[in-house]
Image (cartoon, rainbow, N blue to C red):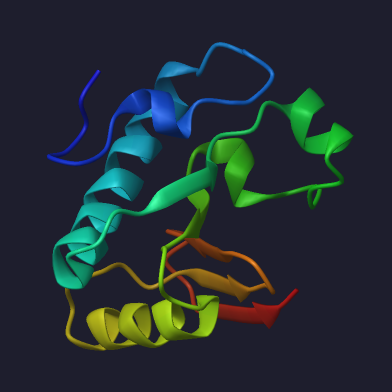
Length: 125
């Protein structure tokens, strides 16, 4: 199922093969819209390494107990040719310009976490 011009539902699916609940899919659709804004701005493909996580998978990978991944509101990404910090700066600008939703951003060595929690949260992994 295509969610936006460049993102499909399969990219946000849980790695353990769990069915995505309908309420989670609604959140994923909103997340995909925000990711499309970023994709359009960058003009580069965004590789999603993580999207929705079932409770069992979240526990298995050591995710936070109330992780936004559980609700389909979060994804982890890599952009070829850009560091996570460079992607962060673009997202921060797009949020400031009102083009992307405010949310959580976690900067890790090899990827960036973005979520649509509606409140500002920032951290380094």
